[in-house]
Length: 274
Image 1 (cartoon, one colour):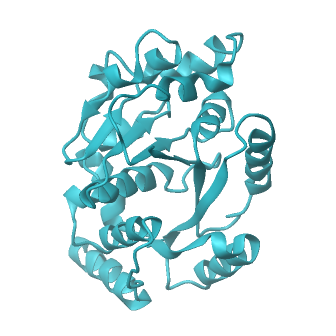
Image 2 (image 1 turned 60 degrees about the horizontal axis):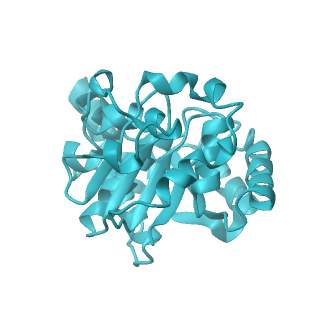
């Protein structure tokens, strides 16, 4: 049975899609058969892995409506062991169109029940909202990863997200658990990053991953080239961080990043563009 993980935070700009793409990529190269489901109408995970979202004719939208099976929309990617169920702009109207459909919260879960291809992991990239699409993801998932950026108001809105998770666990999916909390966009040169790390650890305790994702120019550039960080610059500090995260998810010991390594890469990039 595949382990199904939703990557979710209703707040935008937390590195959610970057995390989904990068984690899926590194799980795949650890020989884990991985399916990435793009459940975000912005389709950034689809384009970020090198697929033109405007050319997608059959997507997760068609699956949610029951027109096609999930397996029929799955496409291969540039990375062995990694497949994608793509999204396109049609998904924008799904929440309104499904509102009166019976068992609307279970549409994604039901589509996954009869998958013939065995996956080790299924990662779901959720939209930055707590609407019906996110509810479908959390109802289908075994657990949820919450990315939190190391910036002001980092914990803003998280109580609402936790309330949603608890409501779904009580009413729709009693197995749903917090897989982990991931700190992203960390700038180790600032006191703010240190304060946010301390605050998030106080709030979530041992649910916080030891891996912290640094603010990285390379991570920001990669989607523009239609490549996950593994293919865009596998030697960057951002790539190393997400490789660590994948190993941590798999329960493999990792060597933590040194703050000075992150600072050195960012400073070197600054010199290159000056």
